[in-house]
Image 1 (spheres, rainbow, N blue to C red):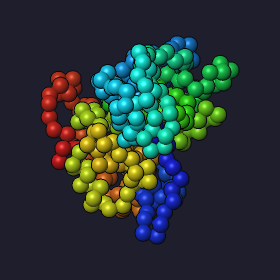
Image 2 (cartoon, one colour; image 1 turned 90 degrees about the vertical axis):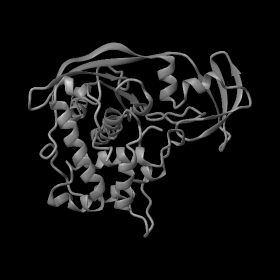
Image 3 (tube, one colour; image 1 turned 135 degrees about the vertical axis):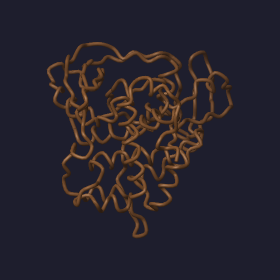
Length: 327
């Protein structure tokens, strides 16, 4: 489901790395992990974000091929892990009932167009490598609102090593997951290399939006390096060696259909804390690196890997080779 950290409730035997992170003093960002230079070219052009049927259903957590075979009385499993009974099937619509809660909803197989403001940015690293990125914002539709600085802060938080792992940013309002309308993290299942952020429609909370961006970058990095959503056994080893769970969200979230045992969200949450502390390599942040040592050492390797690939040229990027997440 869409990423939003729950309130942390710990027992004396249980401690989350995110709790240590939240206790840290303010950290200067961009020293150890340089951020891309972002220049806004155009602002607020009125347009639409168009989602195909397959992409819309994928963002809601459904397998397009599985839906094509569904029958009344059957069972569907959402990518979130939740089970649904199929109540009725009509052309383009499937009525469902949550197996656990009894809540009813429906799956509608149709494309969707969402009104949006389009912004265009150019990202540059220190070696003059540049990339043009489109940002589609569907939240603040009042033209009198100046959201430029809010969006600038989000885009300027992107590390230079991550410039190649995505092509587009979409910003949508948070919504409840009522009536069987389950929304998984779009970056996991979209065919596009899109970072999709869900933000509060009632105000600009930059810190939360940036941390959500870091989380989505975590998923995008795995897809870029491995072509899958799961970072694999090497990351699982880091989790076991560190012993501490990274966050309550990661400790509970699973994707059974993707052979996930917690690695997927643990990696994304780890990237969030890693980037929010600029790698946790200073005296101020050593307490966090101490309990995330294996994870953060692996992320050091991952970001070095991303940097090498970015600077290696187009031909080298086409060569199939192992990544830092393979060992």
